[in-house]
Length: 281
Image (cartoon, rainbow, N blue to C red):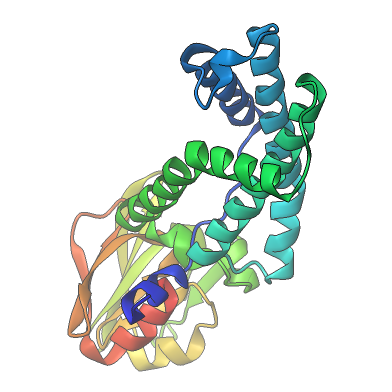
């Protein structure tokens, strides 16, 4: 495994659990595949194939229910809510082992003389993995790339335990002109801030529409005043809301950020690239 592959598997991965509808669908799909295509010698099974197929589907459903609804959530807490590509793959491998053990026991019940031993376990694990490992691994990578392209903020929030990332807390930008009021807005509605000379222009959402307001201040003062994990300085003239990032493209020389509900790109200058990469990866 080379360095780039190691970096990929240690990147943040969006944590999620499947709902009952998805688990039920997967169980039905397993039963249908076994009954219709009868792979791995299942065609030679002499008893009721439909009942046997439904049994394998039920085992898959119950294993998924246990792992998805309990084990995965507990692992998420153990790892301090920091989920990565490697941990998602590891979870899937443990899931396959559990399904294999359950299938092994089920086979011993429905097939007379079936021997439960290390070899039969390895064989069952091989068959289970042959059906599941490639589509599952593909699903992990597809979901990761899709999230990178469409909802990068979901990955950014993974593992960030700050209360300000989890709640829609208000954020206040102080106005240096004391004859005018400060500007306060809920963090979920804040998009970004641009500093031009001695004024900052604040872009935010009202009922899904982008609005802007200006106050007298400098970006340096704003950075010192604002204490919120979701706010990040990406350029000498810009502060952004990490929760609003849709996608980002670039390299060590700089990035271009696309925000949700906003068409123009926001630059990440070279000075802030390393810190930005730590956040998104």
